[in-house]
Length: 148
Image (tube, rainbow, N blue to C red; front, side, top):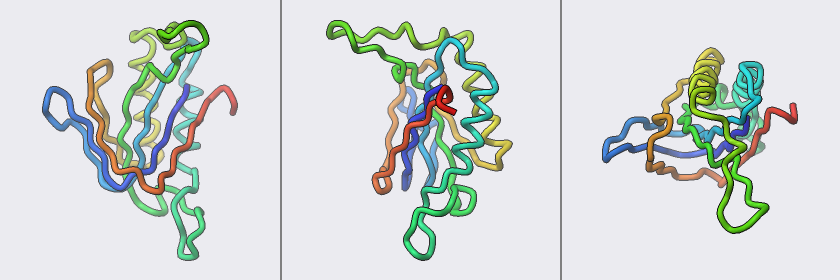
C-alpha cells in the first residue's frame, strides 16, 4: 500500500456537485493499493499514520500525533499512485490492484484508522472526485507498506 499524507487545515471531497466528506484540521490521505497488499499492510499503515508525530508542540517542534493534537482524516482511494511512467508518455496503471481487491482493503484500512480512535471521512471508491484542501505547512509524507 502507498499512502500520501497531506496535513491540512480543512479539506473536502465532492462527487457530482455534492460534498460527501469534509474535515477541518487533520490529514488528507491519498491511498493506493497494489496486487499483493494485505490486511497486515493496512493495519501497519493505520497504526503508523495514527502515531506519526507531525503536529507542533508548545515549543514549535513536530512532536504530536493527530490524536494528541486533534483532527480528522479524509481518506481518498487513488489508484494512480501506482502509475508506471518509465516507458512512453502515457502512464501504465497495471501496478494498481483491481477494484474487487482494492475496495475492500481500502474500506478495511479506513476501519483500522477508526480503531486507532480517529474520525475518518471518505470519498467514494472509483468515483471521479474533486478534492479540495488547504495544505498546512505544507507537510506531505509518503508511506509505503513494503518498506515497513
